[in-house]
Length: 449
Image (cartoon, rainbow, N blue to C red):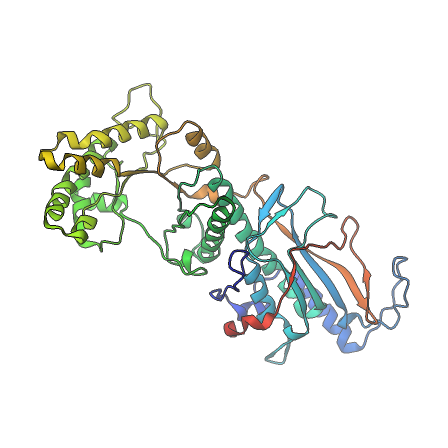
């Protein structure tokens, strides 16, 4: 459920059977469950020393059946864009319970759960006793203790990606951010990563009134929100055409459906300007013929949507001078933009098509990829570098001291004879959050396994 549509996410799929078996849980939580089940089986009643903070007789408390309140909160400062809540709730719905012989007995109906919606911004000022919980769980602790590790993990991963992406979007001035981190991590994380990215795009559009579109590179990155991967060509296709970038793009445009964008990857020969101009020149005659015939589909097929600059950080493009920077840099972008804007001037254009040819060239977008992060994008935007789209990869996975988005679950209260008592560890406190809402875990029934 997101703050933007208030709809429960029904596309989440995961290994619920493995969750029930504890395959994803830190082993000490399995130990907790074993101890509490043994206490429950033996009829154990608390026989330890009563803390002063609990003015109640504990000698009748069945520890194995203890009902607790656990709160989950993030410690990313100064804020985190929360994502993964519905995934955590799905874990509670399908993983709460216990094994009786070889049968898993579900007890999720006995839980009282409150949660925020995905997409809320949660501040954190560095004080773990003053937090805004994103999830509160009340119920028999031994039935959901095993789920702490995966719940925290999915919240941490999804929220870290979402917050990192939001930070990038906030400096991009509404320009699209292509999501390119798939090759930098395990395939298994693509769905949650793509969801975090999508959620950040929704959050950015909501706070700015923009209509930036999400763009992921694999279908699995869209699995949790209904998206699909997109892309054009890799360097390998150009290699298959013996380095003739324009010829490779003509083959691409000929064979691919018209809805697939045409972006030329122009750095294969380290001649970004030359290959960009050659591709535009190769496309234009086909576009001109379609224009003369009134063939809208043909015009779309032969529209060159953009040029992608991906020059390696160890290489200087041949269009630049010996003292110019390596890789994709401000000067290279400006040189390419100027060359594209004038490309039509070298074509043999009838007078009545000169305006159309000029517009064709000016509409070719510039995409930059390779080593871009929030800081570098912010610098490009401050300098008004004529970039239309940024492709960002590994930096969106950052998990350092500034971007770490860890979550914590604390048992902060216990129920004794129907009354709640505070029992937080030193330095923690039960906290409230006005964004918390009651959750009906039954809404997740369609995911039953």
